[in-house]
Image (tube, rainbow, N blue to C red; front, side, top):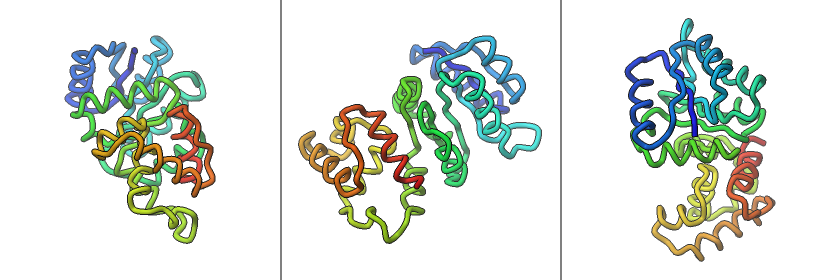
Length: 214
């Protein structure tokens, strides 16, 4: 897998590059501005672009706009947006278009190398990877009188992990329950939400995201 990293902080982008290189990920290029990012994307056409949501000159949404431009030029490239804080509005704005090949993570998650690499792999494969705190924010903003209210606490915990992009086995390991129990919870969640319970992990994540953004 090849990536291009864009962040105006040289320490952060070099740090991410070092972590990923040690994990066996090829870092094709680094960029410190939206303009430089787009040039490097056009030159290298990586599998994934890792983009800071706030970049020069205004430190508002330049990274987000650059991500939209990347999607327009190279729709096959996965995009992982990094943010310092949970910004549910930005996550919703991204999901309003298409969640395929999209990740939205807090910068603090980068230090969890295995988790970060796993998120990159899911995005490169056309799936989604949302930060747990972002998922919690999306769930809290969902309609209070809708089918989400019919979920038990355990089913809601499983739903959060599905939306993060975890497989059934990963959910079982994280929640310390059996795989069979997870399968039952997943089936119940999808039945209550009226979603197709496909066996393809990224498709079921997309189904959940479609529901959460509705």
